[in-house]
Amino acid sequence: MRAKLVIGSVAVALLVSACGFHPAGSRPLPDVLRRVYIDVIVPYRVSEPPLETSLRQRLTRQGATVTKEAASATATIKLTNLKEGRQVLSVGPDGKAIEFLLVTTVDYEVIDGAQVLVTPGSLRVTRDYSFSDEQVLAKEAEEARLREYIQDQLAELLLLKVETQLSHQAGKVVGEPAKVVQPQATPADATPAPAQDPAQPPMPAPTP
Image 1: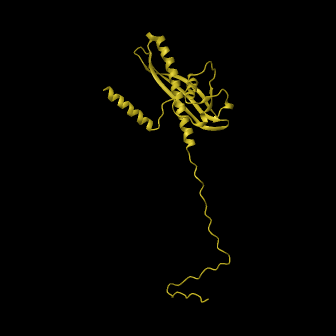
Image 2 (image 1 turned 120 degrees about the vertical axis):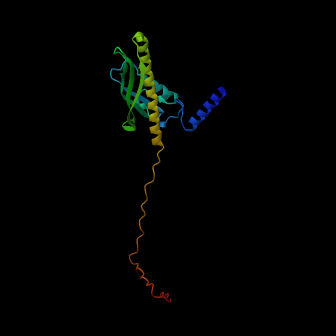
């Protein structure tokens, strides 16, 4: 049974590799992301968001240099409207919430000065968890860990989308413009040959 599981795992790994999928941290980065600056705009920022930390670590693992200034980078990943929310999914018999849905969203774009490299987009990741009044401290710690996990997933999704769009743009082949063939001009002194009546015998060639 164990041998079958090992063979199955190897087969899946080979299949995934053949399909062009690369595990996180092993995908080749587009050249424009070799030197990148991360610009996270968060109002009332106290500490670095987990999204920024995770994104920097992923880029570094893939061989990128994350610069401290946008001027020294070939691309800037701009993140705005990073928001975290919590929604009630279900309540208990006493009317108190017992299940929540954590929602985290962020807007992104990739620019190089005034040039837009990746058009603006938005990402959203959700996770649900249960809550108990008897385990308040444990559940609060669990929620904090889930929020960090969600932002880590946002970093992975963001990088996948950015890499895909940049690679697609780099792979485009621009075709040559269609060539317009001008008709050959007829000499002004050329006299058109008279039409030959099919009922008449062919005219003899002129004697030199």
